[in-house]
Length: 431
Ligand code: RM4
Ligand code: MN
Ligand code: MN
Image 1 (tube, rainbow, N blue to C red):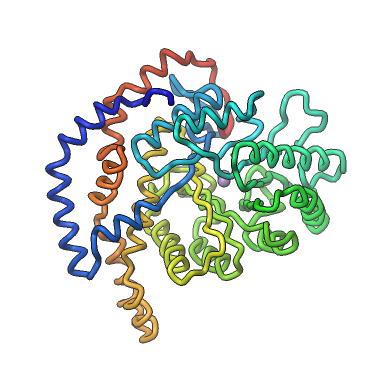
Image 2 (cartoon, protein in one colour):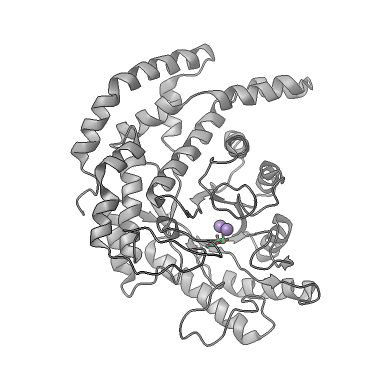
């Protein structure tokens, strides 16, 4: 077991300092909840079950098309990424798994990678393939597409990479492959829209055939970028059609930032649940497009409404397979560890607030067509300050009452800045 990156003594003493205030806040919350017939302890037990995976690409500074400004001390390889993920988990205690991205996280010793992760107390979640960039020495370019390319040799190369990702994921203990492709057209007429989708189905069928029995494939749609006119899998309709044709192991992954700004995402979630095709989420937040901002930083009420659908579905037993909760975010101006901790907490908060919706009263209000009463029930849950409960859950599990404060006091980033000399230069690019 590697020594804890953040001194447990520091966590303990900082928590002690905050404990009296936390106790007082918890007593208040307990009274508020009791008035609504909710037991704090029962809620805590349900809230403790919440977990969300960390994207390995999320512990590095992201960039934009214009520039990337690396942060001193950011991880340089997957082992360093795991070390940073372990810090997030040490402090927030609801991020026990990481989602790797290949070939970004490629290593010679895959079993060794799995071992190091488990020494950090981390497991692996869905594996992501990457056919949106060219890798050095790769025979064929993805400049004009990958799984949907007009040239069968390019498609075969992209299929082979995905199958390799399945194999890597199997050795790491993952159970799903996430496929997001950048394929599409930048000009009207550039691509035969029908033929490109057919080629996607054919390529995906070959990948699907390589899935182990207990695996799933998550099809991720995205409205636009880098294809600026037409993306092959642009929306949940396309991904749903593909998932249906492929079979029961194929489901649709919803990245919250991959929709037009006014899209009602919770409605998409409800439809996919109804169809038994909701794979899970790439959580993030967005103002304009695929911004990959921290969860809950722009539209916390929308996030709550998504969780409202998930909790309602969970309570009526709608899931054969629980949806995968994964973060997908990128940070241009923040310390990624701070952003990931903030997002994980925002997600757990939205989940707990959704647990607080009085479903019986909501059903009644809906039956009576009491629009305002129904909306008010949702707002009452959303307005509830559950911070003390979240803090107590973290502290009980050995984490931090105030993760951000403790992380900043720990000096972790400054230490890493010395241990991990920068690669230098500012490159453009998403990650
Ligand atoms: C894409 C998409 C994928 C992610 C890449 C890095 O926009 O969200 O999930 O793997 O970015
Ligand atoms: Mn994504
Ligand atoms: Mn994205």
